[in-house]
Image (cartoon, rainbow, N blue to C red; front, side, top):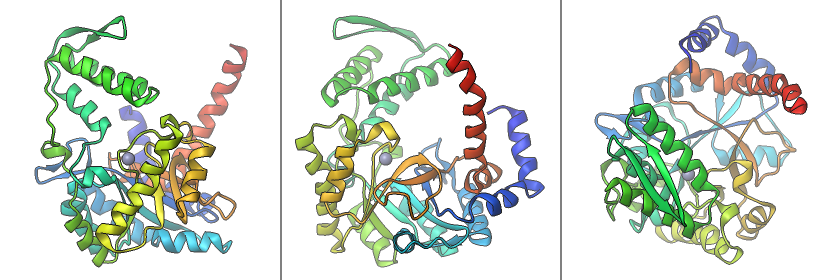
Length: 346
Ligand SMILES: [Zn+2]
């Protein structure tokens, strides 16, 4: 984001623009926030939300919104009720720093969050493929590297830091559209070209929480939901594998925690990442509610197995306040409208 836009956001925050938007936009919408990673005290991932920012965000949230559990929110939506400025907090994937950094903050502010965990990741049987991807690009040499994949030669320009980030994102995006076998083959080809060995066990920044830690969180009253066994893009998964991913994760959590699992989160969660068939499989598995990353608030008319979320940006409190208030959604809508004639013309 440009310095100018960031300054505009901070000004909006200072003059109370986001509070006005909150009243206009969030009166009739229930908002589910999505967090992923945190950083602080040498723990978590460097690109995660600094834990101090998270603490400020939770303080802001509890002061200006009605913060409830996902269960309370979905019960209310099910009864056709939306109380103004209602927000629930969710954290995806189940990294270790959720226990060490984020949970103490949530406890301090009394935020009853839901944690969506990847079953096989917590079991220590895999690290999510997107993390293996990030690891390979983080450890790539600063060079121009060529590799062969399925008969074609590709060149990766990695001499500058910005090239590295760009190449990593571009190839990750391409990989999300591939079938699992081809995706893994592609990463293996890139890792080999870089000369990077992918460890079998996730290293430091990529470790999961343990079942014991999740049991402790559940005992504190936090909710634990399912996020599949291996975090595949479900729209790319063969129908016979859907049951293993969707029911399997629920069975793992119920076995380890001895508590019923009500909530599910789609990996990646954008509209193209799940299908009507995926939603039907989630319904058959018996989940009461499921969350996507399709941006927006929820109303009683929002399908309970396709609830929308607002992905919290890690930058700072002004950015956070903007995304919760609905500012980002309005800006995206305005941008789409501005671009629409050009698209039609082209
Ligand atoms: Zn995830």
